[in-house]
Length: 534
Image 1 (cartoon, rainbow, N blue to C red):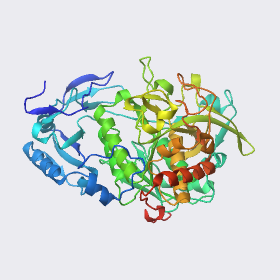
Image 2 (cartoon, helix red, strand yellow):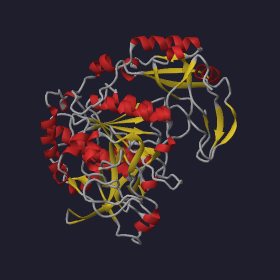
Image 3 (cartoon, one colour):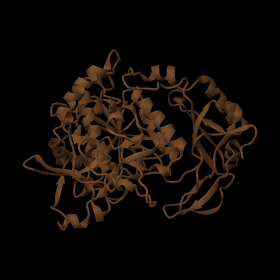
Image 4 (cartoon, helix red, strand yellow):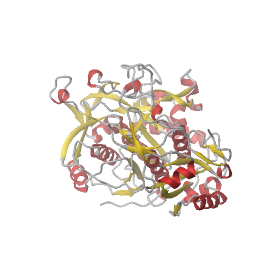
């Protein structure tokens, strides 16, 4: 029941996590930190295709938080005994960080906070909706931090024992450099002057691993920086931990685009951490990533509507700032680890303002591709994610390739089968790893190279990819399935448009961008930042 002077925050309804057990109330004195995301100063453009790329200052002045809304939040905090933690980027990120006791948070947002036990880890959280005072309803878009359950998993798969010993297939593995060669990535570009942002929700890396790995490939180690989001840190542990995800992302992106710097954003594995990580990366004016890669996610059914809406709004901001976001499509096929007999797609891959990357099985001989099919390990349990969103409508640029009314996933693909996986180094241990986690940084590296070749950021790349002739830029995958969805001629819900044919794709995009840019102003690559080497 909504209080008479309060309104329900749209999309905030949350249920108890399946399999959880209620322990009891959160200690009323426990201090909790939250992020309150404010509405844009004015609505974002309905169609971002062909819009001019904005600087951060231009964005803040036009679409950032209204200063009056920020002042309202200061009054709101005062009303409920909450403290505002100043960051200095509130207008740009539209995010106000507040802290207070559990009792004050409950009073401010009309929620009840409880402790729960769960096989995947205990958490505190809420059920039902968030309610906010009527006088502040026009300011607040979403609220994160009143629930700290784990929200995402890394989309990587280690090579199976059967694969290691040749029971299922020959012992095939590649360095990222070899995969880039097979896909004919541009060889006369390095990504120099750009930064690739990697968002991670656990684990870490050791600089010694990075130097040893790149030295083994005859490459100079990239400059790797870290940014702490919501107090998370670079915390490496053991080879079989999520360190594998962090090192996979760094080593794939860094070898594909050896001239680019790498910035890793470490965030807590919560809905708040997820939202804040993307917002901080997109609006990071120190590192200025040209491409952001995300190799984590979970089925749409696991997210609140406010989480998916808020993420998509920041993804739209990235498009306006000329930043491309690549996201792994998932590793559990068309069901996406949901046991209800229905098809599910992974979020944030289903967001229409990111490039969703699916997976293939790649074999080669004498330096060329001999066969490429949908990645589906069958009994081994791994398969590329893909299907149709139940939340996001079909974007305009997918209208001509599907009859379904909702967003189709993935957009593109690349080698992901761990049985034809990537050689990486994790905590001093050599491994072969696959999963669509490898494809997101692979595409991030390729986009960085193409940015350099084209002389400007591709940014919102999806409309351009769907506008070109498929055979001009992709290897069409026509064999295999991810469970429900088979590979077909043209786009399909297993491998999207296909795997990249790098040089041809770059040329096709040059023509497409030149045709569609019109008078839109683009940001040059080299103005982004100057980077060095470690």
